[in-house]
Structure formats: structure tokens, C-alpha cells
Amino acid sequence: MISLPLMINNVILKVNINFKDLEIKKNRLDSGAKGIKESDIVIGKTHLKAYEDSNKPIINPKAITDFIRRNINYESEIGNYIEVNTKKYKDKDFYDTYIIPLPSYKPNEINDYIYGTLVNNIRFSTPDKIKNTNISFTSIGFDDLFNGEFYNVLLTLKNNNPNPLYIRNSLINRGYERQLEILDFFNTLDYDSSKSNNILLEEELNTVNAFFSDSSKIDRFLTNYKDIAINNYDSYMYLATLNTLVNGRNLEWPVLSEEQQKILIKKLNSSDRVA
Image (cartoon, rainbow, N blue to C red; front, top):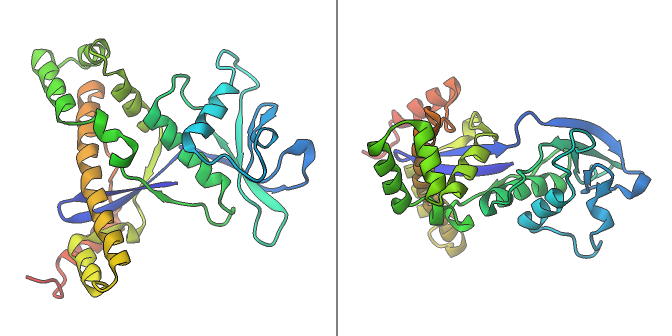
């Protein structure tokens, strides 16, 4: 999975992102049949371990996505499937296998990074604990595409003609197809923020930061996490605006469960909060 921290009105909400409707084959025996092993990627009759140096595994997310894409026959209706194996259980010779969707036919740097990161988090995790990587939109180049200049273009197009199809076609004609590809890809993913510990008040983070003020390492981590959450929300709003204009609906990733709403209200009304 991928975790996307978002700062919304002094509340940090962690949104977990994953492939949608994953099928999982449990307890596959690591027998070495056909050379397929743990942490492998299988595309039809091709698998990654046959190309990978055992002493130097391929870990770059974009390289992983590119390998998968190069071994898919997009014109075929059969024979294309992608299986991603986890590592073995710590004390057993079994791993789990995830059936994942195909990457888009057309390369897109940000989509390929997100896709490859999700694949890697499966490959390098044990079945009982799948990795969760924090993502900063800024660090993967999102802000280079979704920024004030792009937002102004959106508003100009909206003022000219609010029809979603007109806006989409106009963006493509103006060279903004990559932004649309990113939006379309993100709309295929699954979003979950239902766990109670996915909510953190900004002042709670500041309190923890103050407690560890003597530790520069922890201070840098917490400060960086807060900055990521702030910047991620700005990027999210650009993406949400685009979604509203070209798809005619709101982007609803950070949806709080009823339990989370109660926890948040309790935190906000706590007598321990600083006035």
C-alpha cells in the first residue's frame, strides 16, 4: 500500500492507497517450480526472476512498471495476467500471490512510479505484513504538472465553456494529456482512511515534536511529515478541481468513517487542548 498524508483544516488524515479489488492466492509453496520464487513477478509465461540478478534485485518502481509493460501483449484478450509474489512467511516455505491489474499502455512517469511502488510493497513484504510507503507528491514530480499555471488554464477553459468534454479535449490539445492520464489512473485505485489511527491533530504532532525537541532526527522527521501533509493537500485540491471539471463529480478520497468522526469530535472537544 501507499500512505498519502493530507493536512485538512489542522487535521492530518492518512489515506491508504492500493489496487482495487485485489485477488489473493494464499499459501503458495515456494517449490521453485518453473523457476518462480518468492518476490517474483509473473506475466503469462514470463517472470522477473529469470532476468534479475539474485545479488542485485530490481527495486526502482519505474523499472518494475516498465518490465511489466514490455512483457504484456495489450492486443491479446487472453494470456495476459500479472501475479506478484510476496516474500515467504518468516518460518514457512509459503508465500501469497496477488493478482494485480495491468499498467496503462502509455508510459506516464508519475503513474509508473505509483504502480511500481505498489508492486514493490507486495514483493518485499511477508504475507502477514504488507509494507506501507509514505508518498510525497512533490518528491515524485506531481507539483511540476499540477500547479498554479495549470490551475489558471483550467479556470480559463471553464469560463470559456464548462462542458466536461470540451475541457478534456482542450487540455489534450494544449499538451496537458499527462495530467488527465494521472487523474484517470488515480480514479482506478482504492482509497481507505477508515482506521482510527489515521487521524492526527496538528497540535498533537506539535506536542510530540516539542517533547522530542532534543532529538534532531525525530524533529526533522515530524516536521517533514507535516510539510508533506500540507503540500499533498494542495496537490490533492488541484487534482480534485480537475476531476470536478472533466468528470462532473467530486474527488472523495478522504472520507471519514462514523467512528473516525466521533474520535475527531472527541479530540477537538477535549479539555486537554490548549485554548
